[in-house]
Amino acid sequence: MTHPYAMPPVPPVPRPVRPAPRWARKRYVLPALALTLFVGAGIGASGQDTKKDTASDAKPAAARPQPTTTVTATATETTTPAPAPTVTVTTTKTVKVTRTVTAEAAGGGSEDTGSDSGGGGSTYYANCTAARAAGVTPLHRGDPGYDSHLDRDGDGVACE
Image (cartoon, rainbow, N blue to C red):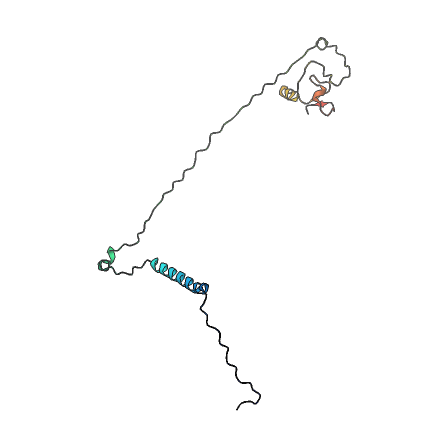
């Protein structure tokens, strides 16, 4: 029984049949060819012979090539180095000391003028290194060899 208000079925509209375009054919053919190429290359690289070699079947298992094992032993010798010789270096430094004797200092009657460089005038050191080499450091104001150029801070003690 059919419904009174039902619509009759509509037949499908026929579409015109056209051949597939050329690019659509390539879309299927080229990947199939590439797949065939890779499968063939895989079979060829598998290393299995498809031909049966009757001569190799006749050989005993011992005649076929087998993997070999090579054992290498290495001996290591450890030596302790001899101690290095001790080298002693002696450095000698020569310092020139100039001694100036004035007639006033030689006579013994010197007057103190109160100058900062008044060290008696009997001994002169060019620098503190010369005074240290002579073994007279520290020099105090009034000592032979004291001079103001040796006293950096001016406290009366030179080469401290």
